[in-house]
Length: 51
Image 1 (cartoon, rainbow, N blue to C red):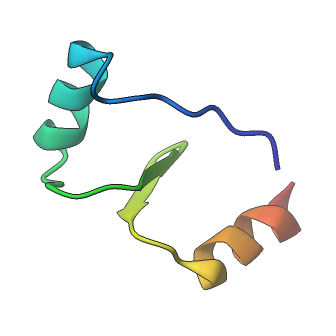
Image 2 (cartoon, one colour):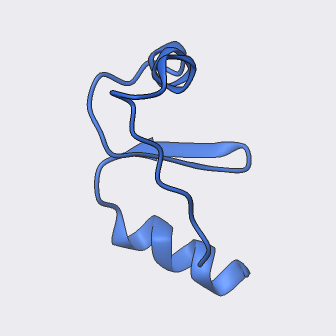
Image 3 (cartoon, rainbow, N blue to C red):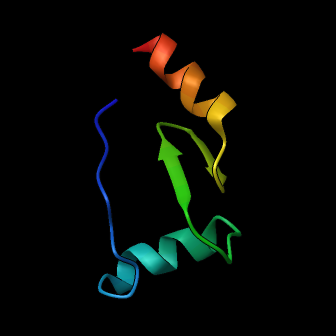
């Protein structure tokens, strides 16, 4: 799975976006229209199967 790491301490716009989604902790994963916070092997596995 290709991914991009964004440092929220360096990117205020990205931090604002994550906060607008309702998250207050990281990691936050955004995959298309789906997003979640925390380590979710089930969701990562589903993305791997879909790609």
